[in-house]
Image (cartoon, rainbow, N blue to C red; front, side, top):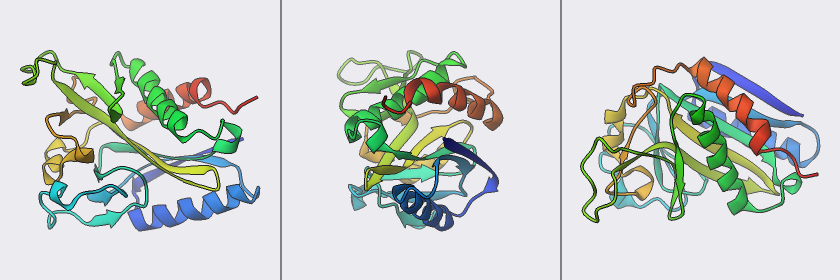
Length: 218
């Protein structure tokens, strides 16, 4: 079984991280079920294991937390659906790269419920949306914005951390970092794309897509 946990209000990052780590230990010991935790954080920045100081553009605006997950700098804040997925990869093939792809597929399928075409990129982790309404990039490719960031950590084949989907955050807060170390691309949200979706709607879409993408092996 997978427990679905939904928290109202803004959750402390430190407390959320401690809770995840305790749950991961319990899952590893076969003492607890897997868990998907849906929540929001107050405005903050997290630094993954590949974070570069040069990508932190305004270090004094928001608290900066060491995330102990893969990836670089990421913004979290109100209006962003955080999806902490504590899942046993020993039951899903023990392939971390394949797991990250499955997280991307999960978001893409959920976004499709609202008519948004999310896409993955081979050279950039996360989910992207093509913006034909914007000028093309210098190389002639269409402009793109990131709508969901992904970063995971694995301990004893149990994955945690997960996904941040922009539903209706303050996009100006992203000016404090180079999001995920990727320059030349912007960020967007469902509401920015003209899709007035609430958190409850997003949660329903995520639950519907989960079983199709992240079933256990066998």
